[in-house]
Image (cartoon, rainbow, N blue to C red):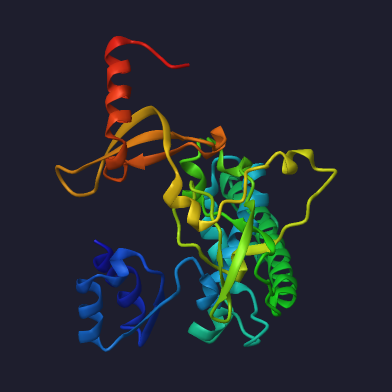
Length: 322
């Protein structure tokens, strides 16, 4: 249980916090969690969806941790879980530019003696002890180097991003996709998926930092996108792969006019709730390229029941339209 883990690993060591910054995970916005910390006098500050700038410290640490793992784990292969402890230790021993002290110093009042600083000739009879120390020193040195490198990159990135981009209605932009938005597109390796998709058209500005855009039908997301997830589209004549992305720019009005050409497959997934299943069909849309094929819930296909019946008939008879 999340609350029990929080008590075991946070409150047990540091006491009840005065405030907690978290994302919108259901465990952090549910009635049990909110009422519990209301009783404890803790203020819950919920960040905007998919916008970690709300909590700059967490964003900075996550970025540095990713940078460290991206370079270091590639060399060490499958031991990335074990490397997290070293990364945490190095980060806590690193002096902050804003406070002039490390997290260790702020909490305990002193900088810890680092194991890799212990330097004396080996006179023992167990060489494994020496090898353990040497491996720790090597791991620690690499971790510190990458964390420092990531910290400098983060500063450079933050300085560059302080002035948000501005777009006008009609501009062509690329959208930065989250992992869950590319998984159902059929990609198997997330590391090989392009981070940005498009181009799409900007319809209008919403508030100070968001824009409403004309999304393709397969993007089942809110069309209001924060500026941090947008970038200008410039056609690259040298990158032929980028220009293969010739999907028509679909405005929101086309969503009502789409029509099913054919049902290609079906799948059933179990929901978190007992005895509930999510039934979906893979839909090929008329007048849209095959790249726009996507999974739709059976409830959203009420107007195309005959297409579903045709698909089931083909499944029974073993025939295909292909």
